Length: 380
Image (cartoon, rainbow, N blue to C red; front, side, top):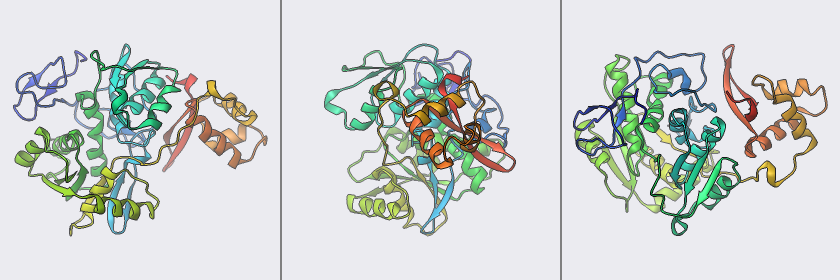
C-alpha cells in the first residue's frame, strides 16, 4: 500500500496506515481517506473532475472513465455504467489503483475486474500476471481477450502471490465517484438501487455519499436498496449497511431477472443478470430511485495486431494519431485529406480500439463532451 495514503475502517473507526485491504483491528474492508476536500473541475469529462479528493499515485491513468449518462427507461432513472471503456464500473477503480502501481500487478482472474485492470495497466506500461483456476474460468471471452494483450502473462495456478484484488481500498476510491456523479447529475438523490454480490460497490457508493454530506454538499444520505439473487448470501458489508446506514436488501428470482433483461434489451441496454435484478426491484418502487447498471452483457472479442494485419486505412489512421494530441474522428478524417469517408474513419477507429492499439477518452470543448482518440504509444 502507498505510504502517503491513510485508511479508515467505517465499522470500528480505525484510521491510519495498513499493509492490506482489511482493517488491522476488526477485519472489515478498509476505505481510503480523501486526499482533500472535493473541488469539482467541471472542465474534465471523466472522474478526473474529482481528482482533488482521489488518491492518485505518481501518474494519472485515465481512459475517459466515469461521467456516465443518466437516462430514463420506462420511467426509471438509470446510471449506465456500461458506457465505461471496458464496459464496466470497474474502470473507475482501475484508474485510481493502477495509477499507484509501480511494478508488476498480480491478480486472480475475475470477470470484468481483471480485464479492466489489465487494460489500464497496459495503458500505463505495467505488466499484469493473471492467475487462472481452470475449473472456475466461466468468462472465456474475457480470458481470450486477456491472452492477446502484450502486457499480460497468464498462469494456471492458485495465485498465492497476488498483489491486487477486487475490494482494495484504492480501487474503492475510484468506485465512490458514482456517488459524486449522482449528486452532480441528479441532485439530492432519494434512493439508489445497487446490485449486491460481495458488497464492495455498495460500500464505496455509501462512502461517496457520506463524504458529500460531511463536506456539506448534501443534507441526508440516500436510502440504499441492495439487490441479490435469492440464492445469494449476506455479507459483513451488507449486514453493516443494514445496521448503520438503514439499507434494505431485496431478493430477486430468475424469472424476474430474465424479464428485466429482455425489457432493457428492447430499450437498447444489454445488461448482465446482476444489473437486471436491480432494475427489476426499482420497477416496483413507488419513489424516484436511481438504478446503477454496473456493466454490459455483451463484450466483443477481437484479436490483437500481432494476430492479424491492419487494413491500409487503419494504418493511415494510426499514422495520424501517432505523435499527435488526442483527436476527434472528424479531425482524423480531415488530416487524411479525403482518403476515406467519415464513416470509414469511425469504423477503423473502433477496430483499432478493439485491438488495443488506440484508446478513446473525452474532452470538454465548448459546452460539449466529445470523444477523442489517441494512439497508446502517445500515452503519458
